[in-house]
Structures are given as structure tokens and as C-alpha cells.
Image 1: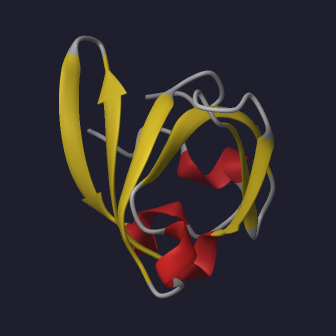
Image 2: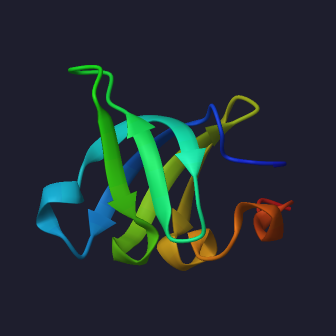
Length: 83
């Protein structure tokens, strides 16, 4: 996978209980933060990457459950994470 922008993500486990079970489309990504558009109320949610313990992401018709540690780092360093 080249990048996360435009992908649907569901955060299943988070250190911050407010961010558990949050989902949306990734619209921006920095070294330490994910920005999602919530499909429920169309607002932008900021979620620190270091709080995410487990997440589910859709790619090429497949659904993957991944460890949150795989998100840490700059977006350009995360190229080909699902290979």
C-alpha cells in the first residue's frame, strides 16, 4: 500500500477510550497524527498515532487488522506496509 490517504480505517483498540471504535476516511497524516473525516457527523477527528493499539483498514477489497505500532513514523517511511 502506497499511503493511507483516502482509505477507510476503523480503530478497534486505543489507549484513549474516546478513540476506541472510531472510524472514518483518512484525509491527512503527519508523523504523529491521523486526521479522519467521521462518516457519522462529517467532522474532522484528530487522533494521535501513539494512542492507537489496533486498527482495521481496507485495501484492494481486503480487510486487514494491524498493530498500531505500524502507523508510527512519517508517511513516506510507511510505504509498502502491507507487503
